[in-house]
Amino acid sequence: MLATLLTIAYLVGVIAFVFSFALFAVWFERKVSAWMQDRLGPMETGGFQGWLQTIADAVKLLLKEDIIPAIADRPFFRLAPYMVFIGTLGAFVVIPFGAQFVGADLNVGLYYVIAISSLVVIGILMAGWASNNKWSLYGAMRSAAQIVSYEVPIGLSLLVPAIIAGTLSMQSLAVAQQGGFWNWNFLRVPPFGLMAFIVYFWASVAEVNRIPFDIPEGESELVAGYATEYSGMRYAMFFLSEYANMFVVSAIAVTLFLGGWNAPLSFLDFVPGPIWFLLKCMALVFIQMWLRWTLPRLRVDQLMGVCWKVFLPVSFVNLLVVSFWMLWVR
Amino acid sequence: MRTSLKENYFEQVWKGISTTLIGMRVTFGHLFKPAVTLQYPHERWTMPERARVRIGMTYSECTGCGACARACPVDAISIETLKAQQDEDLGTTKDGTKKRLHVLKFDVDNAKCIYCGLCIPPCPTGAIHFVPDYEAMQLTRRNLIYHFTILSATEIESIRQRDREAKARAAAAKPKAPETTLMNPSPPQPSES
Image (cartoon, rainbow over all chains, first blue to last red; front, top):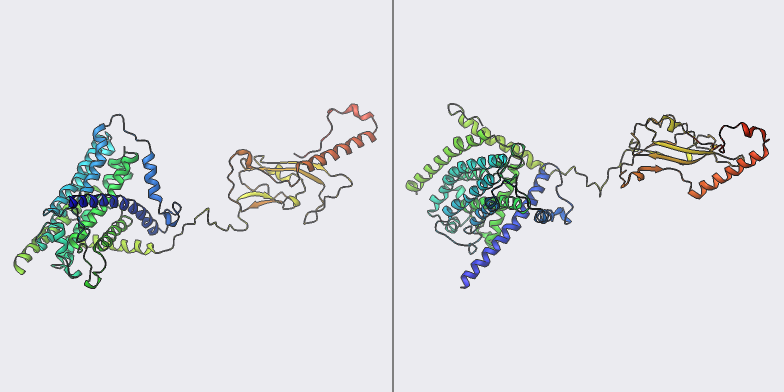
């Protein structure tokens, strides 16, 4: 009974964390983009560096009129943002924030994460179809094509740490990397651990539809892609889930490649695990923002070319080499 | 990325990675550069002393000649003057020109003004000039008319009153005869433009 209550309290805490992280990340992205362009970004709302800006924006979006197009498929139009958000939120169940901080330590955790993240595609397709709008549909189709393509290198790259640790449970994957940063998976079987990490990270940027892989919502061609017809809180759900998704893919990368909640050196163990975990995640989120404000958008053919001609062969080679390494060398 | 598998596949992959890193180095460098943004309502540019932004005038320098109003292509300047009495001394401008006219009204309508500056060269005393004040927003169009006279309404009225009295005295002193030849029965009001 107590355990159930604790789990519920933990998950409520995680949801609160997801929302506050998304608000923080939107603000942080605006600041990062501004700094990289020698601007200041939001400065007025809330005093210090405009820290209240996204909260003010969220309140504004909550108060906006909720417009549903007359020819839209109403039930699906209403459902789609929540599908996207559920797909994102579901992944948090198995992400280990610390030695004791995990919602459910499934023995198929990694598989579960990949499976539930695919709900996002369904939500996006649903949004594009239900909007009954050519831009939305194009955006949704592109998004589906992109995510389905990039799931392949992501899956193959995530198998590398799974093979090294011999488990699919996220918590066990984190525990297997204890004892200093040289035990982290991205430094195992050099350079193939690192290559798997890089391939996963790049493909995950495509997975969350961010620049340079943001053709599903390329605003110069598709207005806002699948979110074109959305307004008010429903639009905010898409927006929040994009940023929550950034955290999810970073958290998976940290858990599988960067040692999870482990300290890089054993004398740093006095710092609690969740703090290490969040620090590493924030670093990866920052790199995603950094990439976004550095690179231009890829064309559709370039996007598919990178995926099928570069990422896929590389991740296959990785998988094969690491498999044989674990089979014979160790 | 054009990846032809026949040749330089690895070169192209390496090029993709290395050029990305070059771009990332550039943006990372800019991360720590100070922003060029000026937080406008809190900080302001100091405008150049002679910035040509809005028409202003120095009332004490104006002789009321009306050259600026005649030069204005859009009739944005409206001036009303009255001749000074014999016993009045309005002083001189800085360059020594004697002021002979009361300038009762000197209005510049900034809604009409096209900021061409054609009113400035004709001014004999340099009274009208550009000022570097760029915050000219007003809530009503009426407020865009800048009143440059420093005389109050009562002062203007007293000047008018004295003028009328002087006219009346002059009329009384004059012989009656020319009165009938006047085409315009209203009392002559010397006014500019």
